[in-house]
Image (cartoon, rainbow over all chains, first blue to last red; front, side, top):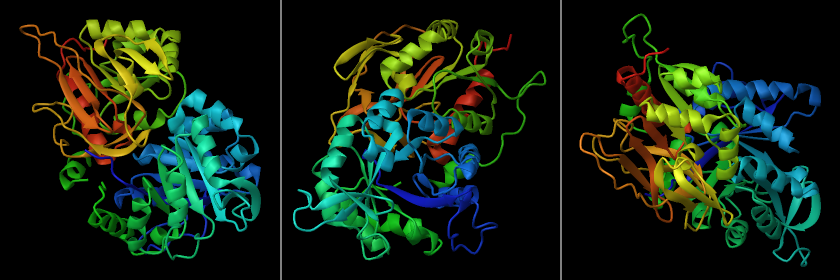
Length: 256
Length: 240
């Protein structure tokens, strides 16, 4: 009895619509997050993550409708991130049907918000999203720094130390995204995963760099408990999730 | 996911009851916060008429009561006390009326919970302690297998499936050794994360799962359907 390595597709949602769309021929509406959530559930996804990239606050409410419709139709865990800043934000997402919320910039700006949210709802509801990039010349002790604004802004904060601090403050999981690997489709940043694995006991979701199923088992070997990807699922073959799970299983790790 | 579980949970169950009402009435206890939307919808799909409420008439009179639970042991106990649910759950169990508790809902049925070094009393329906899982990675988060005893009602048809867990604490010893002639002994289902822990208990009217059936896809849907179907034949459950 060993918990399975989780395979998690991530959808960027803007004003209730999936950004960029998804390359599946049989979808009625490739921009509908609810239909895509169904699709990924049927394909064997272990969880789903929606990242709300809505720029204007007036369009934000559409996200709650998307979350509610998804929760009523898809019975696997749903994490929602983007714009989460407070206990009230998390409460609203949970009430609409999210199981977890992910937090990024707001926690960097004010780390205490992690304590506030997790003491209220428990550790399991909060995922800390870390956008880490490599830095030179000892700018941080681990050689990785935390960035904000999608990797454009460096903070000078050591990414490994930040993961450890967030875990101590009570966060339930780390979504570890490599800014360097993101978009390269050349594989995960395994050194980054190893460095954070050595620092925290909470689950790590590895993200950034996946281009093919063979890229996933090394991330698990480096210490990831879950793997998250977008394009490899959205634009890959129809059975991309099954292919990824097969690769992980053949490397000797349990999958569902 | 096996094809069997998927096939057996795909369609709505045909009408099966007497006296005009075939869908058992289930109340999902509404207290505190968190995602109860999925539980309500999943139970509806499992064939129940679902009410989300903490009102005594809904909680006491339903054919089945579901006690969801997320968060800390002490917080959940406090929130349950605040809506008088401890007494109402106790009354239902004493009267043989079905209750299904989920996640921390399972935990608070035991004698005590030890979280962050403090011990908090639970409902004490069963002896035992809820303690931190001794695993390398905690919380235990994700899909795990279970070992269900033969004859389990809840796991019928899904004994080999994985279910979705998310918790750091668990009951690692089953200490209920009382046996009565004529009363079926409790059935305990185990899973493992760092150590064996209790994944589910079926004890007469009182059932509980450490995992989230409402988040466990087709396998969870089948388990909920098994429970909802059991409400049809449970004694003493006619709605008031």
